[in-house]
Image 1 (cartoon, rainbow, N blue to C red):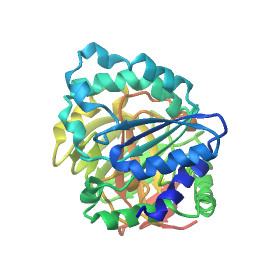
Image 2 (tube, rainbow, N blue to C red; image 1 turned 120 degrees about the vertical axis):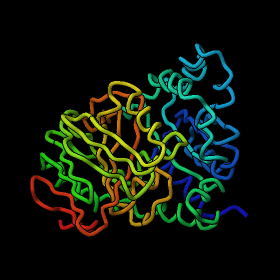
Image 3 (tube, rainbow, N blue to C red; image 1 turned 90 degrees about the vertical axis):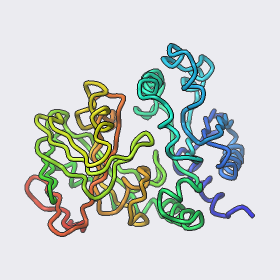
Image 4 (spheres, one colour; image 1 turned 180 degrees about the horizontal axis):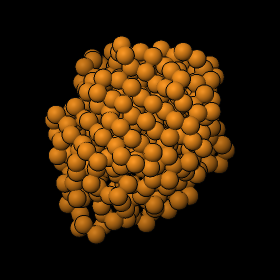
Length: 360
């Protein structure tokens, strides 16, 4: 029997997150493992008088790894014309991640992956600028459950518990915190091995309460690009990106740029990403996790960055819809635990969160 929560999930994605309108052409990406949700999403789009344009893959990777491994390299520099047309003209995108193997991208050499990302960048601008209504989400698969250290049933309960919330109430709660950040000029993050200052002068935060990402449960902004100064130690959790896992990341910033970086495991990959392009050593995002249904790290960034009582910094590309101007192929969210004794967030010298608890 199909889990009844799948239909609720589809209504949330199509209605609350994207608000599909009659006549819209909606790109729907997913893998065969997400068939129940793909079918439920198509039904919901049909009820709204719109068209689902399904792009179903086998492994769950957002990229066609077998093709990208073998195709002539010049083909990686731009998508096929028919795909480019769809991305230019679709009104909405629902991207469902349901991987068979969360490390699938490690099979693709770094140079090929970089060319593929660069080729798709002009079309992803519609996503970054919110020119296309979109939502990214996940569907429970054994691979995601295994990474989280859970059974499949446990992971499904966790996923739906984090997604099927009262998003109107959550939005009001987070908006109150976001408004305090909007009124500030400097953020100071303090923890063991961490003393980092960022300017947010003139920048406004955006609340994600069931919109572009599901689960939602964060507010975020782009710090002033040349402002980061100090050190941060991501010592609690591994940083996961492009199927790779990097532990013990430490970064030191001067004038907004990473001038020193190290890791206790997979440091070579960290440095490779920092050297990817000119913008990769700057920060594109500061996010504050607030989702009450996410209380533990799962090596799953879509969830981990929303974990209540954490912050995350994204190396690389900024977010134009919140004033970010940094450009990079990289956008790597790395999560910092803030629920420990001695940790705090200050705004213009005033402590607003301590040990993961809000003081507002």
